[in-house]
Image 1 (tube, rainbow, N blue to C red):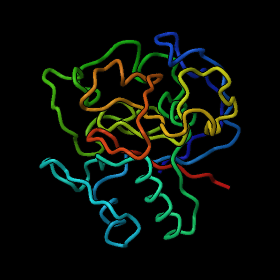
Image 2: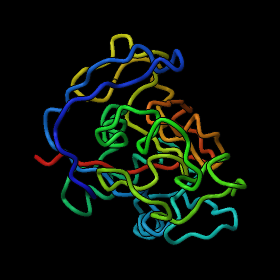
Image 3: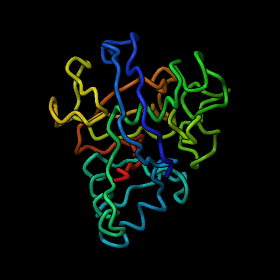
Length: 225
């Protein structure tokens, strides 16, 4: 995991209604977040230990260090509960604000590397010369300024928050939004099956919390106090 320092940033953008209004968010305390997405190898440990009941298919692409995919938000909650019990430390999904703050790593541009798509910087539908249309092993591309891998592309990542169509009334302190359309939860970062527009740092979408989809995975977070 990586310790992300406290700070503040402008969350959202003017690109789509879902990203408006852009607003200042203060992250008052340092927190830890996964350097990469949770892998099949880590998920399978949870299954073997009985903490996770579902063993997702890797679609023939391989398990190991590839991000676990085809897991629901509910599945991700089982994993963080198991990891918390195993380690004695409280793991969780990042809030949507924490996720964007960590993904931006101090930048205000569309992508953490700049304003425009740069070929070969991420795994998405149009991020390379030809679409891979499958996941890649964790850490296949260079990390952002905080040392985080695959915050753009590869697996889409569940966040803790209930879904809301806009940021009107969103928390300004980095906490997860616990009201709204709570049968749906946020996903961030785009995926190997999505266009680069969905891999922008501000891009957001959602899915039913109990539904599994072959592009969806997650990374974990933890408070340091």
